[in-house]
Length: 125
Figure (spheres, helix red, strand yellow):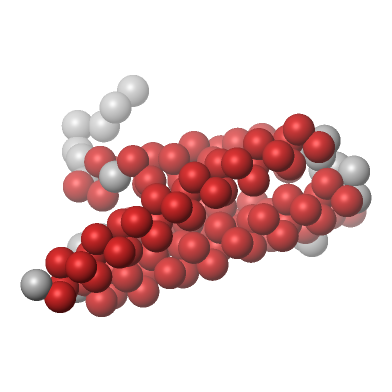
């Protein structure tokens, strides 16, 4: 069900993809070993959440603030790459799951970089 209340940043496709990615990772990590609950599992769940959260947090601010939050979102996406690789190496996820998360992260980081570049170009004018 859709909310009656809407925020502009929710229109950003990269925000929507980041939110979907975080839900995918949450689902993937449910099968991790219990001993990983406060280790790689926790880190792997928090990093994707940080992508969407930083887009939302930076959106209403100045261009400089938004670019700063986009950069943090990119850092979080990179953290997801490392977490996915660790999960694959520890055999918590399959090769195909690792490839799919990497594919989605490439897409998200390209979108974030493009958004940041558009903001920076606008600032130059």
